[in-house]
Structures are given as structure tokens and as C-alpha cells.
Length: 200
Ligand code: ITT
Image (cartoon, rainbow, N blue to C red):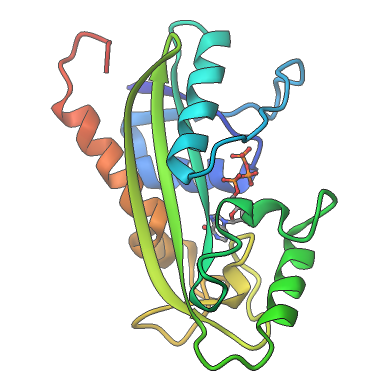
């Protein structure tokens, strides 16, 4: 059993990771660790921010294998925005529904509604970055939100090859095709290839 500490306070991510990584892993996150300061995501790419989160948390929780996910939605018509700013697109008091509302308002009736979700997962231990892996899923943005499952921009994202939004699809289906699923598969591959010395 491999124990991972997820450098996140986003419970939706934690739930997806638990499902994606399966029985050989146990995952905990930072939601119960109120004394850990919020990390300022000062990087300019998903990879930089994922590494920043993983390395910072791994310096606090020594000997833990720390995993950080930095992810977001890139809309073609916006030149890739909101991108790394996805979580706070509607401002500092943003929440999922405000972010979705703002994105739909700005996109209006734009014909090119293509977009992708992108995810970088960084792995760190004792302040050292061990690896980063990434995944993406391409799709289109709907004209209005549909569905109750998932989180974030799921109600307005239809993955290519489907008619339903991620929020209408089951978590099992999302977890087969999502950006996070692809990155998590590479992470599992990393552990399968790593020597069993505990250094991961
Ligand atoms: P942590 O930094 O604590 O992990 P966060 O939610 O702030 O939590 P990010 O900075 O990586 O995480 O921002 C990710 C945002 O991108 C997330 O809040 C959603 O708005 C969006 N997002 C990422 N993955 C998504 C998914 O699978 N479905 C829908 N929206 C997603």
C-alpha cells in the first residue's frame, strides 16, 4: 500500500484521486490540517504551480510522499484563459457557479466553443521534486450548464465523442477519459517503474 498526501483542500480532487488510483494507494489531503498556510500559486504554468504546491507541502510533512494537482480549463476563443486562473476566474470570492456564469457570459454566442481541461500532477518528497506528469481532455463548451455531478466547469464541458457534459456523465465515465485520469495513469506508471526503496 502506498500512502500519499495530496497537497489540496479541494475535496472533489481528493475523491477523484481516490477513485483513480485504486486499492494500492491510500490518499489523505490537507482539509483537516488547518495550521498549514495557503500556498500562493505564483507560477506562470500548471507545471510550475503543481511543483510549487508539492515541494512546499513536502517540506512541512517530512518523509511523506506528496502529490499536487494543478489543473484548469483552457478555452480556445480566449487564447487559453482561464487556464491557471480557473479556480478564481470570477475573482477572489469565486465559486464554481460564479466561474461558470462568468465564462458563459464572456463566451456568449461565440461559434468556436472548443476547449480543453489540462492537469499536471507533481510528486515530491522532503522538499525534492521527483516527477511531473500531465493529461488533457478536449471538448466543447455548452451554452448553459447541465448536470449535477463533478465540480468546477464540469456542467458546461462536453468531452469530444460524447453528447453529455462531464456533470451529466457518471464519475466512472469521467474517470476513464478525464485530464486527471490520464495524468493519474502516468503517476501509477511512475510508481510501477520506481525501485521499491521507498524513494518513489
Ligand atoms: P488546490 O489548489 O487546493 O488543489 P484548487 O481548486 O484551487 O485546489 P487549482 O488551482 O488546480 O485547484 O484550480 C483548479 C480549478 O480548475 C478548479 O477549481 C476548477 O475550477 C477547474 N477544474 C480543474 N479540474 C476540473 C475538473 O475535473 N472538472 C471541472 N473543473 C475543473
